[in-house]
Image (tube, rainbow, N blue to C red; front, side, top):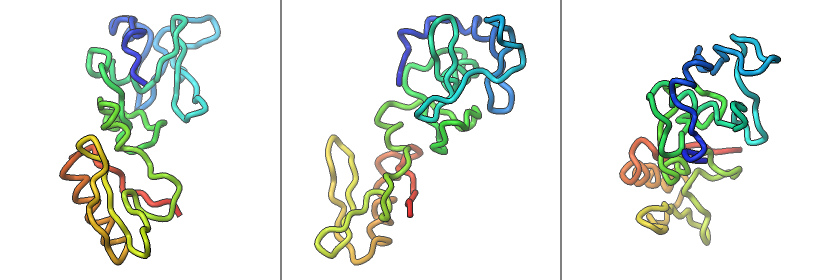
Length: 168
């Protein structure tokens, strides 16, 4: 979630209280008596993201890490490139629009690859692009449909292309 309006804490203040160590956000200075410097900041919420409470507000740890490395708060969402919300290594974080971020997510729990649908005995490939769904064709096998989907995904979305995950 993009929360720039509430991210009023300056980058200098972030640097005063937090330090980035090997993919983790740690307390550099204690904001509360119960927190010891050097401890990992925050806890994991029900959606699997690490969040930290600071100055009466809650922040995504990934947003703070990104801000510390880029000397500014992100204006968009922060995408976890590998789709793991607990992997907050700076190399795994990139700023993304909502659409780009939604492209880079795990496939729903289904047996067919992303973008492939069983349709009257054939496998159809479809991609969301250009403001709607684009039918890419019908194929005899899910592998053929998936290959066409991957090519279209690369063409439309580049590095933000759909992940190639299949859940068994």
